[in-house]
Image (cartoon, rainbow, N blue to C red; front, top):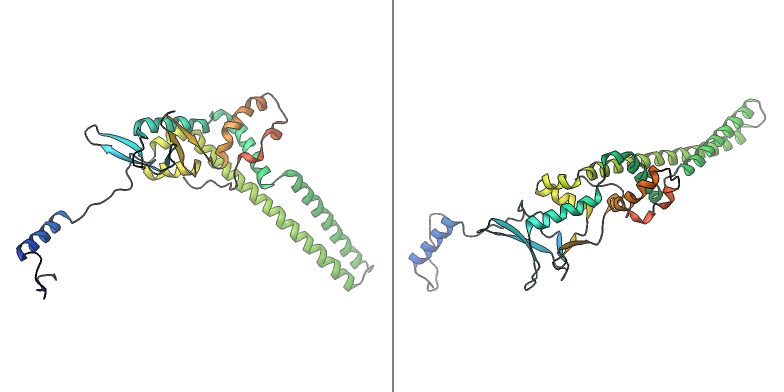
Length: 280
């Protein structure tokens, strides 16, 4: 068909003209298809949740008679099925493991910076060594300039050592600037992590669909598994600084009591590579 006109075919029709027109009228009336809503506000954990039994992603659905949402395993025949309300409450309980008292922010910030400094090899000893070398080179440069002014060395020798010292000074200054930038980035990452951790469960609960998913994926980049028999979650990978919070919580008491060796008790492996939390 073309708008306002019907073209007769050369082959015998399979259906009558009246039936053909009626079908097209119904298609125009009812839209001719359906829409799948992938972003159901009440089901932010779709695909993020994995079935601990078979490993498949879990989807969700609405029981209209009850007005209740459920998550279920995608695998046909798998009985892993649970109320959205229950699973959301359990997820908030899981998030509680990655938060801490606001009074402990200064201690946690110091611990986080120590941890990330180990991971990225940003340390005060390295900076001090660079600063000592820089001071030494500047002193040598001043010395060679003084000797040239006093006529103790000629132009060729002066230019040779002046350029050498200046190049070395420039290189060290670049390394110190890079070290300072790294430290600044570490502090930004730590501040983001702390601000999120302080209100993690309530922030997730109050967020919209998109933000909930960003928070979920930030903490658990590979998703989480739900075990129906144990009625609990299992996590395979916890991302960034958040993986260190439960461990560091155990070190807080010792630090408050004056344990000066707490830094040595912070393992570098607790935090995976990548220090900048994405925007949530």
